[in-house]
Length: 267
Picture 1 (tube, rainbow, N blue to C red):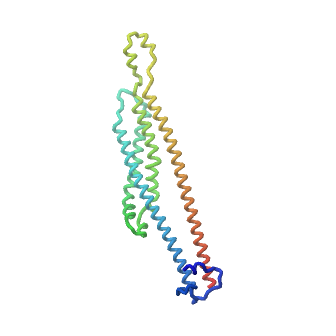
Picture 2: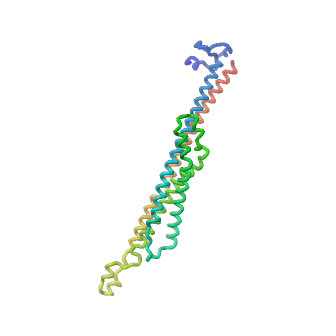
Picture 3: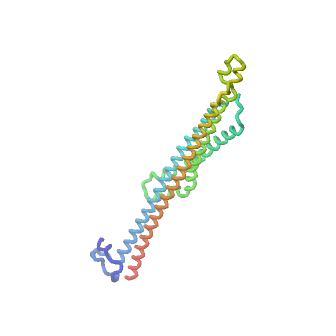
């Protein structure tokens, strides 16, 4: 077969009945046909490998979305149930509305991602456990690609940002009533009214704690957004390079097939 591959394409045409130089009983037309079938079959296997890679990636995304959504939605529900509001403190109306809306939207977003993962993941798992190359076409991951990406985005990008906002609002609800409008113990134990009136008001420790947590979470949110943008740009760059490599490989195959067709025409 090596002597066949070393045959120049511009050599004088062989007759339809002339055999290959190795005398293996295969003429030039059969050799070109066999080479074409080998190229097509290798391209077909490459396409199947790409489909299986997409299948495994979709399954991994669905699993990660399912675990993350279940975990974060559970934390949000526990935070809403276990938070203890001070009845003697007048909370800002905007704070309570923001806390309730953020918690509700957070749980709803993660439940949507969990619903999509729960519905699609069994079908993908059933196909991925079958040891047959042609069974990849039975998986719904290609048709449900947009839903899988929606669940992945809800669970990771939007869900984590809402969870950071939930932590900030929870800190304000929990720490804001501390030492608000109440005199300190040192001021109440003084004997002289003049001394009591001249004593400065105690610092609002709860407000400072809530502000510190807000600053930390804002920095964490900025780092999260920067990492997300950098990660997706790197992923898109990697996919673009892979597509360019595949296009170059297809171009090489086209050039080889065009050379085989010219050889057939010369015959």
